Length: 417
Image (spheres, rainbow, N blue to C red):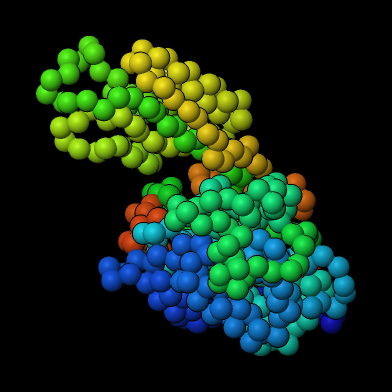
């Protein structure tokens, strides 16, 4: 056996330390931890700063070179034998207000665990390896989601993103300064390849009894905020035929969105996720309603048809009820398809490691989709217990975490060799 063949056999035998990775996930989950066992680490809050500081400490312990760009993305690079673009792993560490320990965090900490294995084995890869976490992936505090990776990869404007006003009335720029993460690096980081390990955040893998998802792409996402302006009036004395009821129009829109999903069929989904009424009193006709429309589909043409129907209904129903309306786009991303080579490599690697695997789309948006125009990219899914995510009960078994991280390790080794 040649030295090259010996090295290949040696790296194929490498495995991540599942106990260490799970312990790191638990430790990070304590940052912003809530009394009910969840995690609230909204983007650019003090809790996010604490989480960032902790992860950067782990990056530097591995001897990685850490930089921060102007939107607050953090990139850590492990040098290779040759200079050039790095094979990059990553995700995000910000959470929704009722989040769990795995969403995003797994992709970042598994990437660091992969680097740790190479350090311990005294392996210097041919190409550099990077591990990154991106600002405001969730979009829970500042819209849109995937903000940091979107700016970095050229899909979103840096200036517009920095000026974005969040749910607390502050801007991205102000909060980056406040937590000390307004970096000086240009938002121009490029990768040789991009890999993201992530929990599925859905029920398909568990339902089908499959251990690994080779993600084919991410469905298109359309987020729209609708503001309806009616007239407040007495709920007991105002005849139904004489009302300008913003709440009624909002409710009708929600029902129509469900009808759109039903009529279009899978994989179309449609959601009213936020609805705020004013004055929000039991005996007063609502003068104002603000709601969000979330439409998603893997087919851009079908997604556009769903949008057209939804927007036409808003206009028609508001006019019928004498209610003024405004619509604002919060986020709009077309469906993306991951690299066929990466998809095939994930699938083949999972099988070589003895795991069951299926090709599948992602229903949620992810940072990986932002890399698609610039480099071959792909994702690895592991099951979510009960299909639950964005919930304090979010859970993935330790064995599934370890299995997914080992697939990530071997895919990475193939790409850097």
